[in-house]
Image 1 (cartoon, rainbow, N blue to C red):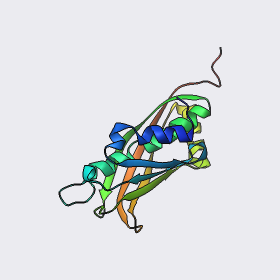
Image 2: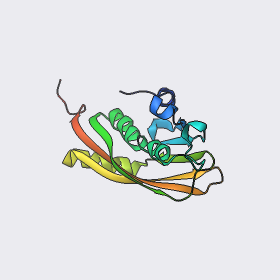
Image 3: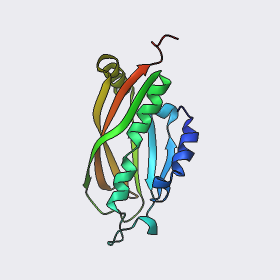
Length: 159
């Protein structure tokens, strides 16, 4: 479903799996070229060390590259299925304050996906997400692998 950046921001803010873990979409960039996310430290997501639970950090990184690609490709006329195929997380430092990260896609990455979808019907690639605390210190690194499968192209479909 195609939506505006603002609509999707608010929908994801109140999506229960994100809301109850205090994962807050701060903003989507114009044309879904990126997203800024905050993981608020809260009683709802603390572990026994009083730092942010690792599962919350992992969950925060899960959907965003898939969401960005889905919106961008739909606007370009592709009918696709997109999901996070796999992820690997490296916890570097405990999250003792709120955490922040951004996911970005540039023209070259989008063109690479479109080219692969047109030639192979699928696209698989890993992206790195660096999750930092308020002081800018690295707390976790996530390697998120996105899988995109082309169902058909609206541009070339005859009606």
